[in-house]
Length: 310
Image (cartoon, rainbow, N blue to C red; front, side, top):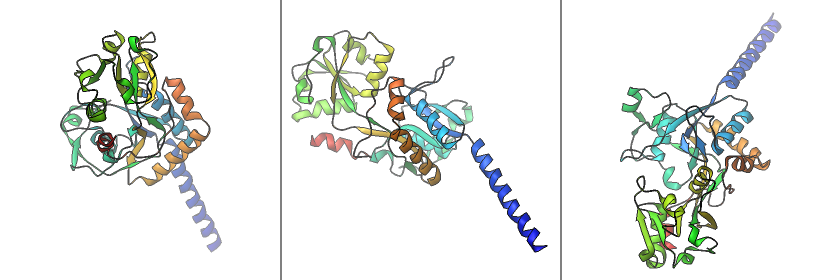
């Protein structure tokens, strides 16, 4: 009798384990992606979802043997929000377990300075969702999967100009958006040597790359992904890449809650395998992204101090 009780007990344990495995396999891997960040992620009504992070998310979920569910959100700019707070709120509210395309910097991974934050606009949000605040948790990064630097882009009149450093921009008509990282870099270079050749535009109002393409200016310094997005939208554009990358850039990866260690370990395992097979670089090519592999430092420190010290 004791023998049969032991057998039944073991059978019950195995059945429970199998049921748990089935539930885990059926449980979607929920990843939050920005709906308007080409070529990383794009979600438009009536069109298939696209972008580098979409392809990578699909591959990660497949490696884990789980269906993928993308939670699309829209970033907003106000005094009560930031990419860090948006990601934290989405994760802490259970909207997703991972946020993709996250810039891995020391200030984006510190403990939040506030206890709660509002959710960004997201697909399926209700009026109450837009009003309420979410208690924030602690963030933990995955290993990086792509490097995102600043690059010099040239207008038609400067096409072919050799750029090996910021100093090679001397003599060119420079254009930059006020308050941007590129603005800080150009304005502080060599104690302000380039200031007199810089024209400032208002972000969100003026068309920086359009003005450059018209030949109104000769060069700018922007995020490489932004140039890729412009080139995809305007295949016949007159602006060209210089091939120069500013030496301070950030890796991008996933971010999740620090309490979900098992998921972060599984994510890193999948990323390691995909990178070794060359799949991540292949996804970049498919999405029209100038793919650069991650580099040291894995997590970028105080970028403003680094700029000042250049």
